[in-house]
Image (cartoon, rainbow, N blue to C red; front, top):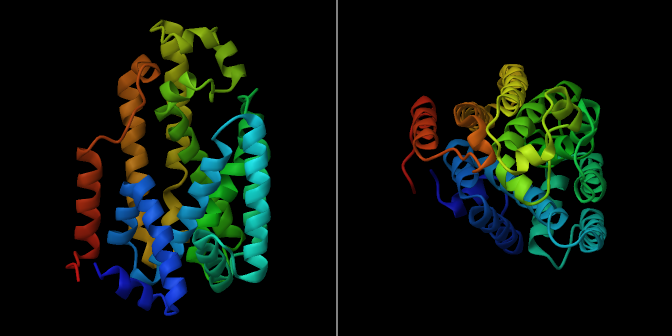
Length: 305
């Protein structure tokens, strides 16, 4: 693995101020999500790493603002962030080093601005005002408004000129699976925060109430509901097998590892059953280490510089 300075140089980022901006963005990702950051550093080709680190930092920033504070505070914060992002994208400059880095990444890689706009709009509506899903159609609308553009403001930077229609559709399938797994893995924490992420129509199908879930009742009906939700997630996960063919070669080891870990996490939820209502389901330590080791062996381990 080359040093960070070498990584910036190999990406063509030579201006001292921009190098500092990308370093700031990467450090933010490392603090917030160390596992994805290290996976990116270890497995992605160096010329892609700074762009994707800036994209992940921006995605995290929007998520954080959309999920923090009162509804009024979230709305105000997102409106201000949208204004500052629009200015950064138009001028290439910003008082915020993260936005400067992201604007440079978007401009250099040619990511269409529509994805950024859609993500910010979705954050202000589908995410900030989230009150659950009535049914599957509601869930799919959430993906279209927020989760799908949220993935593409990050992964879309791998493509020069942005993703084409086929690539974008592939990431739409990917985010369908990823969001289902994420919601199931975070059931306990979401319920504690007042968020019910399983469509209400499916609770009704199984004669399960919200109180049943909030109180972590281990009943046959609850177990059937959770098993059915895991089955849906498993089917969507099987549908993302072709994503590697739509991924730039330099990012394929990262996406392969992400997909494998999604499968591990879903299996852990399946094993937990109603226990997933009492405690969020993480990756653990063994699965990520083994996945990373296999990925490194496949692509050839590089010595740190």
